[in-house]
Amino acid sequence: MSKFTRRSVLAASLAGLSLPFASNVSAKPAVVPSIWEGQKMYDTFLKDGTGFSYPGADDKPIAIVAFDPQCPDCDHLQKTIKPLMKDIKFIFYPISYLNIHSEPQGTTMLIAEEPWKVLEEQHEHFKDSDMRGIHYDVSKLPVDVRDKVWTNTKLHRRAGCRSVPYGVFKNSKGEYVPFDENLTTPELAEIFEIKDFKAE
Image (cartoon, rainbow, N blue to C red):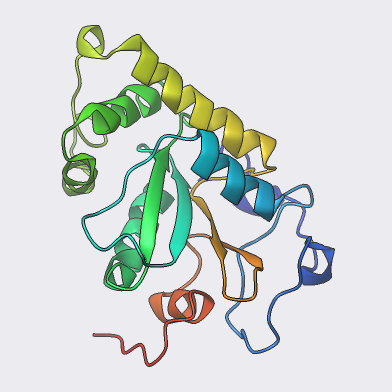
């Protein structure tokens, strides 16, 4: 989901990325903006971004996910990757990209003791008639945490991302592989190098 048409971004060939994809990866990668920098996205979000993950072991491979709480495609991606969370540590970074509710909802997640539960609540109420997802009180949202959502947003833009959701995974060969909502769970499992994945 984007203020641009999702398919209006310039697609780069796989050879145009800073590192090539492994030849045995047959899953179709995300649409890649020509200016996207996978390593920059991965490194800067880990270094300067503020995100959260679901409970689980910390020694799992890491996948970075930039999402907007107001984004229907982000809602879809979260459901698609959920079966893979036992094998991959997904770190969710809320950004403000779509409308006035994006930043305060993202801030509400970040200030929560268990942000992943607020993300689950966001998905549960995403199709509510009054608004997409959780309600919030702007007067109770700390400015320093609101700024962290904006920092995430800047990192997303500076890495060359032009849509949400957008993710990057550093595989075992050191390649930075993009992913988005257009991939199925089995395709994502292949990108994340999860062996013997079986869809339920």
